[in-house]
Length: 65
Image 1: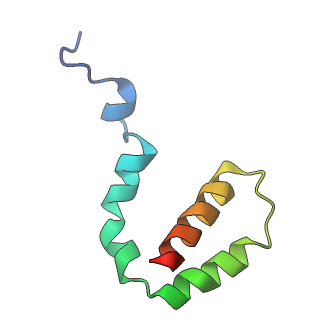
Image 2: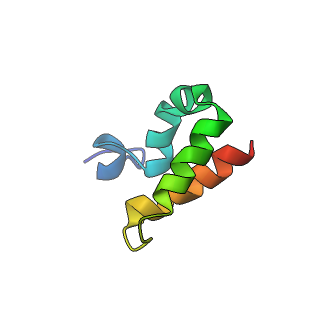
């Protein structure tokens, strides 16, 4: 038994938000035009897949900053 509220998702990769924080430095190094190009490319794909849907949201937000 584990004490402290550590669940399996914390032990075996964590939440998506925590995973994204590991890549924050890489994301910040991509220029705005790169995010706009990636957003245009992702718009070709339907948003039925959750990965594509999250990627579209991330690209839109990153291209604004």
